[in-house]
Length: 183
Image (cartoon, rainbow, N blue to C red; front, side, top):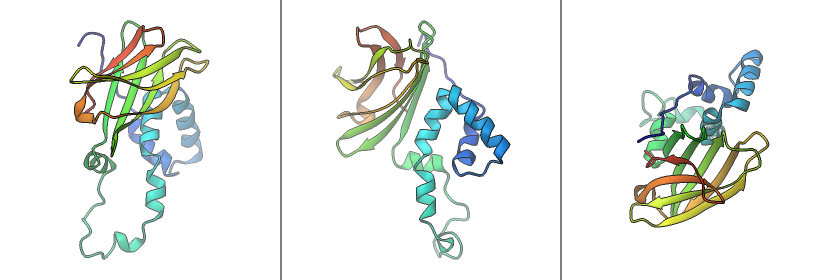
């Protein structure tokens, strides 16, 4: 689709190491500086922030000598996939707004976590979920920071399978970025 570019950050794979506190002080400082300016890595960090709490509950026996334990611990990606967590990333070439949305299934529909950058400072925005049946639900509204960024959570009654696309708009209706169906 016109106006969308797939975006990846080479530092995204280092987020887990950072989150677990395994970087030396110099690398940790560099990662903190990087996170301040990288919307994609901030989105990944928000996606994984539950991990240290979960890992702190595990005992050594959970991995060593447990009769049914796998040879290698499962990857966070496969765990997220099993939970049905999906992600959509887009950059609008017209507005230069960048967005990453993580969609997590919940009993009442979907929980959304949006990381956004490139919007006008202090801009009032909203995230709209558009269903395959044409139904539209405003899932969150907010005002961007002085840097034109935002990280907001929202929810919709639509399941990820029912979502056709997600749309970030200015409250006055101007489309800022359209995100494809989360995968």
